[in-house]
Length: 260
Picture (cartoon, one colour):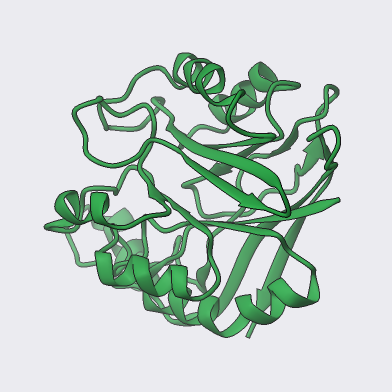
């Protein structure tokens, strides 16, 4: 049995700090073989930088995935190709820099991971996530024993539909982007682990990681405001998946929440 931890969107310094504080011990105590983390909100809540990516990898993360804020930080389009173990969404245009997947290996077992962006209520130019996932699976099935698919999307329906579409063809389909952990972790009938959103790693005394008052006021009067990253009730949120080494099917999935 192998154990894989998929960490939800790391939000700003609070998310990075709790990752550094808690992940090394969590990895040891739970016997985790692979750690994948979404880092697209790691730099002040929007995007990532080279220095931050290196710090996240230094905490014990094996692979960093990204989402719709992938290009928010100036210069990252030049840095992304210089840092191993970071991949951008696979359904962005091919002209975008960076790797569209990663392959990790532990104990002779290979895990491939890639991200697809949803298109419902999302503004980025992206290929159909269903067709992109089909294409990536064909490309990767000979290179890896297990495939993990992240669906970074707004609509729960789109995430759930992709889970059913890929059931039996990948080890897990895990949702990110909405920052709220869902209570639907399950193993689908053909052996694929699914969770609509694994939650965020950051401050929960907030509105999706941002200070409460400016967001509430924006809803009330519609005036633009700066949304600073909040600092209260910081948690690490992730999905822990147990994978059968012989079958590469998911045996169990659970939400893991670690508080300070």
